[in-house]
Length: 123
Image (cartoon, rainbow, N blue to C red; front, side, top):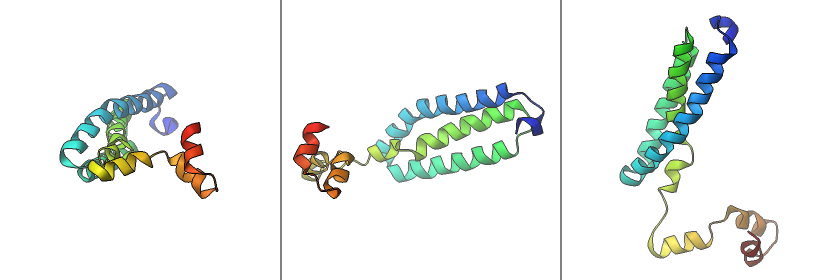
């Protein structure tokens, strides 16, 4: 990609760094929006932002284009990663059961034949 655009490694690596920074910053807002409006809307918006970022990276003609693509990709990943799904925590009695069975390591250990109480004590 850097050869095709006639740029060095620096603009590309800067764009990827900006993508990671915008992912981290936007994840907070994606979680807040998911809490208020639902995770499905955030995931759809994140998917659209990821698609736009991928297209913009494909169509990039300069280092600035890569930078803007990185921002869009970071926004997209923050909306399609695990952030919006944390907003889907059930509440009430169902929430208590969910929290009691939460550690995925317990699920893996149970399927391997270990008891859940031993797994919870170790994790």
